[in-house]
Length: 99
Image 1 (cartoon, rainbow, N blue to C red):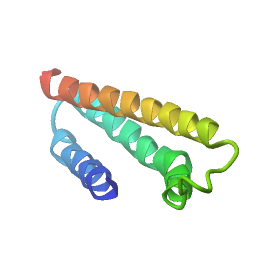
Image 2 (image 1 turned 180 degrees about the vertical axis):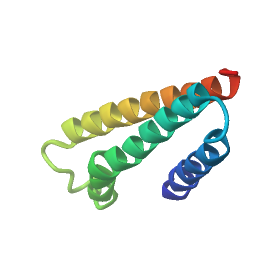
Image 3 (image 1 turned 180 degrees about the horizontal axis):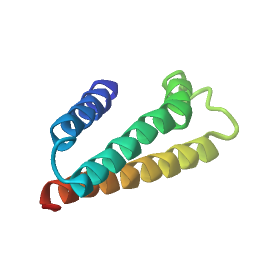
């Protein structure tokens, strides 16, 4: 996942270059999409990734007392991140159709 999120964020940032010379509205939509994607990557590093790192070390015999709460928190963070990335994609699509 880190490769795909990083690669798609870089691609989104590269898409800003051709829009720079076109319609200001197109560029604004693309910039908002890129910003949302960057925030989603940073959010991932702060939210779900640390939980993932802890969960990898869990064994059925030695689960932490709050394992259900940690799984619920990861699910919530994943839902928030996914919604953000869907909004970023929709905004990027709007940037292409804003002509």
